Image (cartoon, rainbow, N blue to C red; front, side, top):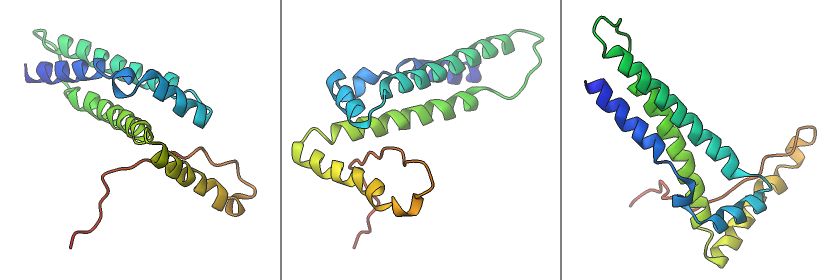
Amino acid sequence: MQTARQTAHWVLAASRLDLDELASHEAWGRLERYLGMSLRRHLTGVIIGSMHRAACSWRWTARQERPGARRSAPPAARIRAPVLRTERTLEFFADAINCRTNPQVAALLRACDRWPSQHGAAARRDRQDAPPAVTYLGEGRGRRS
């Protein structure tokens, strides 16, 4: 019964992952144009994968609840890690989008985005181009006096 409740929780958590609740459609579009890639398409695939894993685990749990079923390790942990990983990824992009709404801050962050490609060119002469960088303002882990 506990496994069923945990599995139901993670199935519900996966089903509630929604890109449009994190940032506006226009804000996603600006970041996608800036990076030259379709983040929403990729992240939607990640969300669908999390939902699929959660649904599979839900079905597994239902089979385990039947009398005479052979018991194995509970699937809640197998659902939890990918759903949490997906949530962290979505939160990163939401932070990256939302902290760029101020034009002055956005200009500074764009300058930080370009720094790795400008200063790393000599080090990677024979390697492929570096992937685009996205700088954001985080909470940080600075020292306290």
